[in-house]
Length: 317
Ligand SMILES: NC(=O)c1ccc[n+]([C@@H]2O[C@H](COP(=O)([O-])OP(=O)(O)OC[C@H]3O[C@@H](n4cnc5c(N)ncnc54)[C@H](OP(=O)(O)O)[C@@H]3O)[C@@H](O)[C@H]2O)c1
Image (cartoon, rainbow, N blue to C red; front, side, top):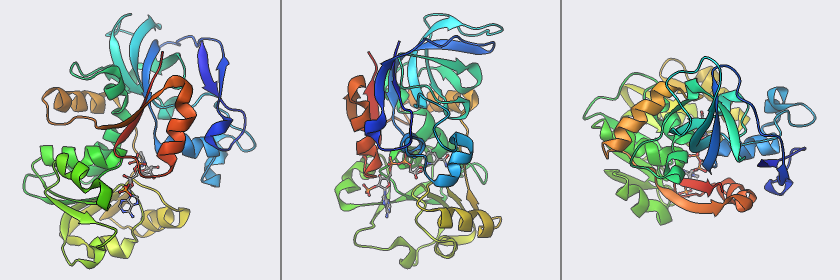
């Protein structure tokens, strides 16, 4: 099969399209014929081996995983031992972040615990846009318990992959949503359902004096003091984004019980919950750009600039 491989940390140009062996599903896994993938910040972090401390698990001198790619949608081709509930031909979507990556290939093995039937009303490309970003939004918003109707929620970074789902999920829960974005993205974020918009190029949301029941910081560029200052009494914040090791440590060490750094782990249960919302028409992935498989390095380079308007997807032949 064809797959993008890389042998050393570096820029997207290090990815090389190569002929490799098709993987064989182990017990509890299925082999999926990948028909679409989406790119995530995780892809360029792992490609570059940054932040440096991540190489302790990714491989100190060279990458342990030759094939990247976490979000996929496709068709079950082969079912491994002990798998019930899936059969060849089933249309599925999945996330491989916790299972050794491997999505930027024509076939990938997928443990059934991180996979679900594809939402019926989405194309493969749209479905591939969902897992990492939407589950991160879901787990971030739910970190301190389910949102209640009428709660005020601030989403920092409303136009990104995670933010575009977070705005829709918070609205679907009945919250009053304020989203922070930049001037070119104001209309996009409004169209996702945000009630109020803050343009970070002209206004500092932390200095505005407004306070929120919940904050989801998908960017990770605010200090603990700024987040605390924007929380209403009893309010809670979750940070899923990452801009520097210093900020990450500050939130982790000084966030206390009200401000949590959240690392998402995709589960079938979360994917099924998202499928319900998607099939009910309450949430829909927004696709910014589509790339051909051969142009995957360009897709990652575009995302790495940090200003994608929601999701970037790749069609796999
Ligand atoms: N914790 C986890 O499990 C997890 C999972 C997924 C992602 N992440 C992390 O979360 C972050 C975001 O991921 P993503 O997939 O949403 O990335 P993305 O699609 O690249 O989006 C980044 C967004 O950040 C916005 N942004 C940049 N500077 C901003 C600022 N000063 N204020 C407000 N918004 C700003 C950009 O909007 P403009 O174009 O308007 O600037 C863009 O829409 C990344 O750091 C990623 O590593 C963490």
